[in-house]
Amino acid sequence: MPKTEFSPSIDSRPTYAGLVSQGAAPAIMVADEAGAAALFDLAASDASVMDHAHVVLVGCDAAALGDVKPVALHEAPDFDAATPLVTQLLNTARMGTQIYLAGSEGLIGHVSALAFAAGMPVDEIQMEHRGSIARRMQCVHCKGITEDVTTDPFTCAHCGLTLFVRDHFSRRLGVFQGVCVDAETPGVVPEVVEIQA
Amino acid sequence: MKKLCLKVTAVEQLSPLVKRFRFEDPTGATLPVFSGGAHLTVEMPEGDTIRRNSYSLISDPYDGSAYEIAVRREDRGRGGSLYMHTKVSEGDDITVSLPSNLFQLDLRARKHVLIGGGIGITPFLSQLRQLDMEQKPYELHYAARSREEAAGIKLLPQAAHIHVHISEEGSRMDLGAILDGQPLGTHVYTCGPDGLITAVADQTARLGWPKAAVHSEAFTAPPPGEPFDVVVKSSGKTVHVKADQSLLEALEAAKVDIDYSCRGGACGRCHTKVTACDGRILHNDHWLSDDERAAQQDIMPCMSRFKGTRLELDL
Image (cartoon, rainbow over all chains, first blue to last red; front, side, top):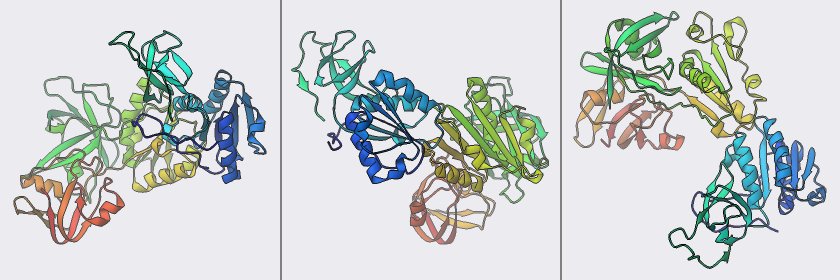
């Protein structure tokens, strides 16, 4: 599956330029199953990029990487399991460490927020979107985060409000913002549509 | 521009070339606090011209009882630092600008590395107080040629994370050793000679640091040079710039309306369009890009000079 092209939007909406090798530097790479294909392509463009790379695969196994051999390979069943591992890698990383993220908007948002908290400028992180365009949404009212949102509007998994899916993105939290869609006219909710790229 | 009329309440010789000055409000009022790395512009009236130089504040940013600066005497400068060294003493009145900051700390950093060369130690003296106050991890490296010249030693606290490198004593600063292996989220700040700033930029680029984590400040007093003439387009008036005067100072003396802030080629406030140029602009600022310099259609009057037959400014 090739990298996703998103339609132009407000500046807040993250864009993902695609992974470009920064050479044989220390690196932290995080990908889901669709994103693993982007790491595979990255290694094909420059094999040396894996010489000092720690790869964390979320929700898939090493087979997704084919014959690519990073210096260390970690597998985690989901974000919650991957978070302490990625945080540990970030906290012990040195300046000059490169960060590569590939996969869904949720994965990129989640891990880029961890990297940002560790002091990495977001625009220095290599990102490539592959696979699901489902979004990680924060309800601006109750602050709860709903994962894998594919429709607009959607129901907040925490407070139950009907939320409009905005392109407004928090880099600090790695989430898009959801705003109550019927605050002025309770009960008058627009037709539910699938989120588009 | 709002100005403060203060009293000089202390002058101390820190080293053969560097003096410390303390300014307080004459009525004892509290002065506006500032942030680490901020500077003041000091007015130095002499005859019919007012010279203005910017100096980093070295006092505690949270202490409104006084502002302190340290000035290095430049015998080959255009006279600003010599004025401070020879004409300013305790009890004098002095006019300064409000503090402003072009070299602030990025408080998102997880660690700060401060590198000062020579008199370039000054902005870090206020920054380290802010870092102490905010309990942020940092290390400071101060490089000087000899212990006698190292005016900063008297102003630096003794601490394990404050390192003094005296090249005459064989302890030259090793940038590779300082910068290699710093934890992710470190920011580096450099102030000092151009060579030091370039060396830090090169070293961090080699180590793969993000550009956003590398900060520097290089503003210096404007250099003297050969006298030249400049034409003001709106009035057609010719203004003569003397050898020991900056273009900005000459324009101000001729009552030409022009904005400024840092007076050291760093802030961009006095950026002026050139409408005619027959000759060569001697760019001394840190604001214009290489392409802009080559095009000769822009000039920073606070720092830059001119050699040629005609220079006309869009003023």
